[in-house]
Amino acid sequence: MLVEDDRAVGVRLSDGREFRADIVVSACDGRTTMLELLKGRYLNKTYERLYTRTIDEPGMLYPGYVSVFLGLGRPFPQGEPCTTYLLDEEEAASFAGMGHPSMNVQFRSAHYPELSPRDTSVVFVTYFSDTGVWRELTDGPEQHSRVHKGEEVHTLAVRRGPAYYAAKRQVQRAVTEFLDRRFPGLAESVVARDTGTPLTQVRYTGNHNGTIAGWLPFMDGAETLEKEVNRNGPVAPGLKDFYLSGTWSTIGGLIRAAAAGRHVTQFICRDDGVEFTADIDRTQPPPTQIVIPVGLPPAPDSTVPQPKEHE
Ligand SMILES: Cc1cc2nc3c(=O)[nH]c(=O)nc-3n(C[C@H](O)[C@H](O)[C@H](O)COP(=O)(O)OP(=O)(O)OC[C@H]3O[C@@H](n4cnc5c(N)ncnc54)[C@H](O)[C@@H]3O)c2cc1C
Image (cartoon, rainbow, N blue to C red):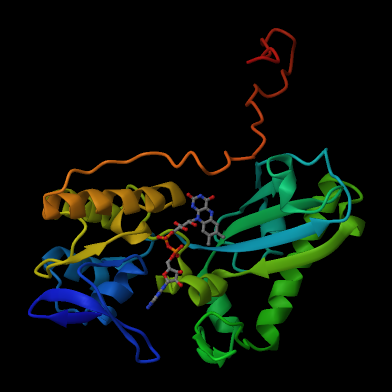
């Protein structure tokens, strides 16, 4: 981050190129922004506490995820669009690093058939996972920058050692067997698989400890951050022409992260004395997902009213 006289004036990339700008918005990992990119020079008491202590207290951040994608070589209409399974201890033990004995399974083709070729399906399985377990299994770097086709890239695959890959394969096997018990024939339909761990999240996002979405709602860290942003805006105290955006400038999750971009623009407009306006880009095609109405669960007896089709 290029700073002159307490004013953000641009960025310098790792290959040395510099880009000057009137305004700089940081939308990456909050701790990296405050402690590394800004070298800890613009911390008030709140940010100092958040990023040097609170962040490493248990339960303050969303954990990491293990995510398994399975490509099935045939349609799977019996697969449910989204179900969370609560597991018993024995089942949970087969999933490396499982933080909470539960697993979310989404047959995503039900909502997004365009995700895979016709007559195939995609299953997305996730569970919250302790990053430390994966760190113990790996003997490679968490991120490794390389020049690829003349460009410096920071998210290429890294070598993590045999124990890590063995654990990933075990997770894939356990997920496939778990699903095959519920949806017989699924295992033999698998034609593609891909597994990510909390360290994959570190590699791609640089997020502290591989958290999927930063501050966890209702905990001290999230509440403190929210009060700070409400009080002073998404800024680094004392630094002009600089704003914070993305998931770390709010309380975690995709929708809030997306909305944070709009909020920052509102602050920039206010600081520039320009009226903020927003509109929807109607030149783009509308979303294509299939909306499946939520119904009541099957009634144990017929006295429970069931939703009619049009509801
Ligand atoms: C597997 C998974 C499943 C999820 N599921 C859900 C869900 O179901 N619902 C939900 O609400 N949320 C979900 N999330 C969380 C959600 O995806 C994130 O909260 C959201 O994408 C964050 O967006 P962002 O723009 O703030 O950050 P990111 O999308 O992480 O973007 C940050 C960018 O900054 C770049 N960067 C990092 N460090 C630097 C640096 N030093 N210099 C330059 N660039 C840098 C990164 O490469 C990245 O491109 C999920 C996350 C994961 C990983």
